Length: 428
Image (cartoon, rainbow, N blue to C red):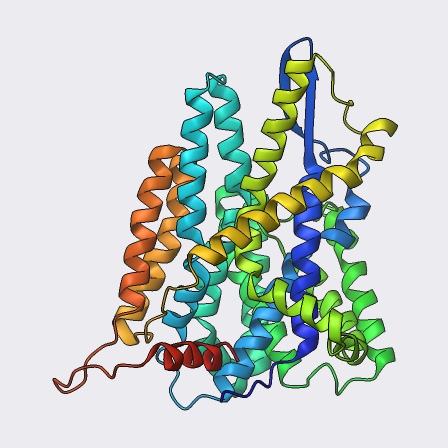
């Protein structure tokens, strides 16, 4: 029997962030049907949204939770060689069926005669959240190395990442070359992971509540100060693409506030119904993340088709009528996402995870996993790129599940129950 020492507060955090992501992306869908013409925009790309972005920008919390969970898991393991490959298995497995469904869906939209620009727009919208998967796999795979550095010299490790993040921001701003800023896809989110290491080690808990509140306030105050120099934006979603030091400051403030709330979150998450809901969402968090955008597109397509067939216009985005319809819209997207995740979970329930590989094989599987996601952005998400990304992802999974042999001896085999227990221990 495998015992779990997971921090329930982290599970609550992940579940809450997953729900926020689904609701936010559903709200962003600004669809206008007028005179037989269809237009799709981001409804929240407005001048007044930036104050709200400070509340709903929860990406730093995902990396905080990931870093804390990884640290706890690694500190309980004698052998960390299979850690990266186990992360590839867990994170990339849901991508394959999701991309397969997306490829079929985009092909169907084209076959139904939808304008190519609408099909292209649908592919673009679906692909946007996928960046997180590629970056998260990379950051998690580096956890053993970065945790070792953190434990030996925490101030130097964090300070170096802060310096690198600021340097990238300065160079990007000075040169006007936005591509330079994408180096911070590594540095900013590795900083988020470092905050998770601090959290798991009790670093925040050792500070008084007053000190943490002051720290959060100082970090948040630093964002407008940097924005005044032109280095960052006040909009936390503009700071996401490419990432800037503002997200690291926001992440530090969020970590301080979360650490204060942890005792109550642990108590709440341990309750019967609440704990059950948290466990269900946590078990399927990556599938929810990957499937909510295809589900959103399906709901949008059905709504648009119904509007065109009945000759009934849809409410203009950001009007009172539009806002009044958002709760129903979000519930529809949520229900469609749940149906998709439940179907995928049922069809993949019989799959057995393999024992994770280590060393060079693990590094290769991580590189292929990141490459599969990168292909979608380099080529644009269409049927061809989806199929190619699936092939690369399957190769990454195959390599991640192939244990290395030592001294010519065959790899140790496991029963199905032992394999699932192994991954459960690795997830910690």
